[in-house]
Image (cartoon, rainbow, N blue to C red; front, side, top):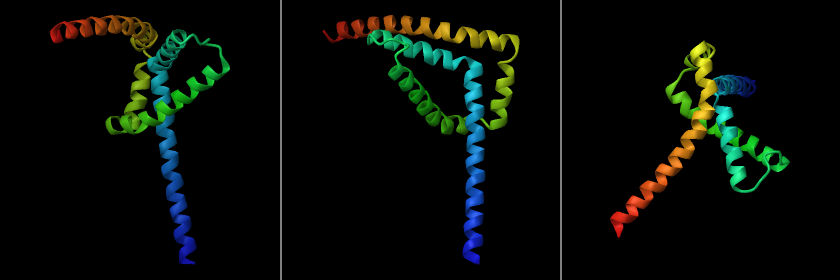
Amino acid sequence: MKKILLSALFLFSFSIGLSQEDSYKENLIEYMKSQGQFETFSSTFNQMAGMFGISESDEKFEKLQKEMIDDLIELMVPIYKKHFSEEELKQAIELYKTPIGLKIAEKNPVIAKESMQASMQWGMEFGNKIQEILN
């Protein structure tokens, strides 16, 4: 009887832990969406697809993109949990529903794309200058 009771208690506490984890993950996804991060991810993936000559509408590419985003979210949950409570994520989501928050979310993908191009150029210049020092 004790074993059954202990087993039931263990399963119950395990399921509560999982539901809390799922709740945090759902809020993190909502937070990332509200920031425009998914549009930024999509833009980055599409840019990389173009570099490799892959069509953005390729079924395999679309499946890979979804898998990679799912994997990234799994990696992000423990990182965000270290720095933000679930309540703080909810507050941030509300912030991104304000006019300035909506503008930030709208502009993030565009800024990320432009920044990536500028960063690549800057990185190439930096690499050339390092080569000059070494020669």
